[in-house]
Length: 246
Image (cartoon, rainbow, N blue to C red; front, side, top):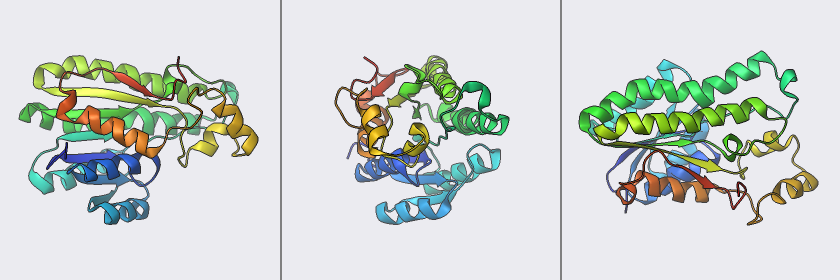
């Protein structure tokens, strides 16, 4: 029970990596707020794990406020924040990605972390403790062609993680990131352009371990980084990628 009685927020928790992280946190004793734009999906996972679902657009101040208030109502503190919500654009030449898609990627993948920090970091600084885990991607380390603006957004997450870690370390707040490779999540088809056996084989051929990242993989890694076992680890962007970035 490595997260016993910790109060944790996981964004994008209604499916994919976020759901896997929420499940692991609950299994390790945390009280989990599951924030997702799809409130029904979040509620379904929350009912399974005994968590609290919040319908929230985390790219807005209102969405961040809703999930923060839900967490504070559990015990007046927030111990863990996992910024997992993310979107991508379909594989396209960079000049063909629409401005609307670009704005959406920056809003969900980057601005949401900024807005969460504005609201939750002061609380963690005041309590002199906290762990933040940002879900970045191998795309921010070893970019794939035709996903340029998604790649760039995840590079931003990695740099933001390091900058946050340096600034918040004196306050007892740790900030780390995880870099998964493509995984069995609702975004997989979008990354590949089409979900076919041939396209899966092409993607898997770039991963030495020979499989995609799973929600369980991300749950295990996030649990470690959020736990006291990682008390000396901050500013790390840990690859959970089966060797993809070697």
